[in-house]
Length: 303
Image 1 (cartoon, rainbow, N blue to C red):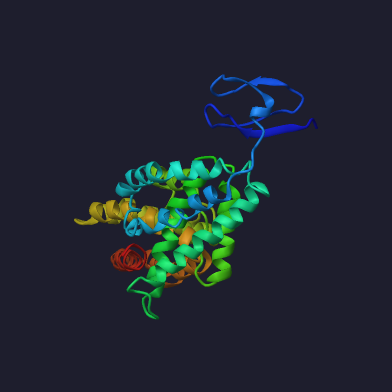
Image 2: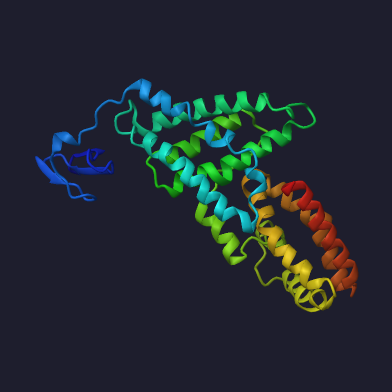
């Protein structure tokens, strides 16, 4: 494989990779003509990098209510504003990869440590930082990391994206092993809202157990929804509410919870009994359990 030179165009700031044998080239993005040595990465100033890193915790701490803005109506405008606010910082930091000793991997490890140090200090100052309410502080921070910060890294297609996503999760779990979370993906999260893919009944009964989408349980639940429930006076409103709440609940379980445990609890506590009700011809009992399930999960995950 021919040797290549990686660097940043001094005119437009885009990252480039060109054959080392060229003496001159034109930028693929802005068309600027330059000599190859102009592209070669120069060592970045350590002070400049540290100034950028010091701003990373603010990508979380400036947004104390992100966990309240993940419903279908709020998610898209909230994410758009979050991207507008934080993309410039992340792009500046990403431009440092080429000249940073050790490249993107080394920068990601250092950035994750600095960011988590800042988040730890911030969480410990929270009035809720007590034995009984500490989990609430962790939860708010995990939501911001999993549903906003790490998806934005990937959405911007940064060189730093994957190593920083990995380092943040790895270093977080090394510090707080019981506080599980997984980096999210914007396209997956957005697609769940748009296509109703996020349905916690489907997820709990099919994904967790490996059952097909047309299994007996799901067929029965859909028949119940489209038949009995829809004909109830309050049925259409309950169905609409379900499709408003379900995407956010499943999103949180998938990236901030323990899916095997949480979906298992949903199945054991409600869905198995609901299915038995339907088999026995007790749709009113199934409806009552369904409403209890929705209310309980709403209180647990969305408040």
